[in-house]
Image (cartoon, rainbow, N blue to C red; front, side):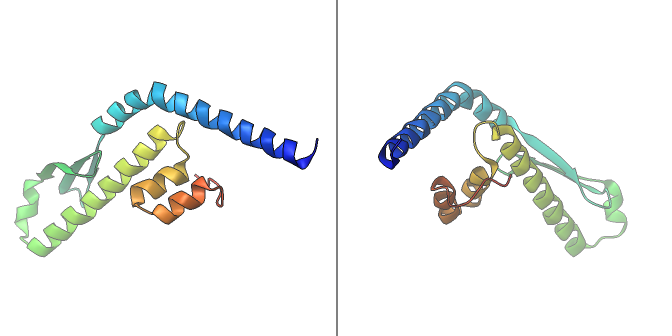
Length: 133
């Protein structure tokens, strides 16, 4: 087989792969989207006095403060604890979304999309970087 035939065969195989991926996205995407949208993650602070629940976009859904927190009033420590705990919860929900969509979207590609890293997205789509996730 000459190089032109190999090139055409490779392009046909790639087109078939894209079609199969699109079909899976169409068939499974709506259910996965609904499951992702409903995701919530709760994380506790290291001292156990702050509990934060975030939704699928990292938005604060619930904040619980143990009454023991008021025994030593320290607003700076409390604020830092809330921010740190919410950050960990946001990272956990992001990773759960990536895991949820892993059967359909390469993990590195989805991470790049979620990070807003358009250069990385194009590099991955162009095949310049492998999927490490």
